[in-house]
Length: 303
Length: 159
Image (cartoon, rainbow over all chains, first blue to last red; front, side):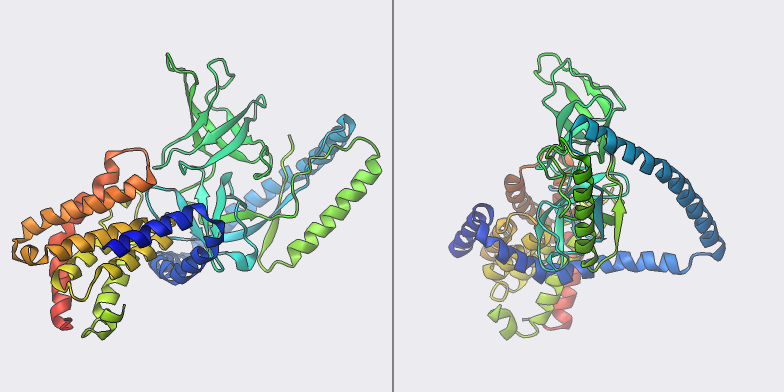
């Protein structure tokens, strides 16, 4: 028993304090990955069965709906592109920086339940696909979280709702910056450190502010669901509902590196700037095409 | 692990432990998620009670370590608490075997609560009564678990 206690204590220390213990941890994660995949098999099988026995008629309906959605989105995209150009021009006029489009890589969730104390998920892409610690993870509706640990075949993603996770945001309506922290247990997120006179309203959309340089700018984080000003407390009590489908999304998107948010101001020579942009874009698409999995480009949002 | 390999039909122990781990990871509906019994602890407790010379603290510690790696917590937390559970059960296994099932279940309640509180101390989540539900569900599951594992032990003549 003494030995077990000692070994545990040594492990606590190594795991939480030392960086070079990471490979050991990664190796352990790789070791248990087959077990995790096995645990997710029944769910996947049931899903597959559901797909297999789907009615022809149902599938047709689905295709029709999807076609209609694509058309609508294409339509919006046309306008988007024009707006994006306009936005770039305006930013150049202002002499401030602008953003490139981010590229993403699709990863799938390994459906296992983890520790209910921490809000984490496992995804099926690891170092073999170039996933790195701190990589932002999105789903179709908004930010989900970031990669916390990678092993060679899988990685662990910390969700926004994890109590140890905070994300810099700004209110879409007025640009007020703040930090949103997870509360765990599937509860709402909390918006921290805003004084009582802060201009926050119910229904405000929060987007990533890009401060801190980890998350790309402008992706939806959540919506404010309640604003309270408790008496005798220094800060307002603001609850935020995550925009991403944290509990149901199966396909996640990893934002690829190499297209960091450009922060250097473009003061003069718009020609040179555009040439540079194109060069960067080319380089990025080359980098992206060397990656094996399916990639899609996602619109860099304009503010 | 050497003791397991040498024991007669020790693979049954390993297989039940792996199945318990799978059950811990298996996705459950959101509403049932917090009521998941501590399968691995219960399996360990059974084997430590029935065959304390086979399932030692080391095996408890190792399966805890694997759980840590799978769950993504700090390494060593579950390893420690599982080893603790095995130690306590192995210490009192002779008395425990004499107890009626409901009294055993009470002991399980205490041990699982202990394991759980070690994990809670380390994770420090916001306190909520629902976090303690695994203790209750484990206690309720114990009679079934006991019957199933005893059946396994007798059919495969694990000793």
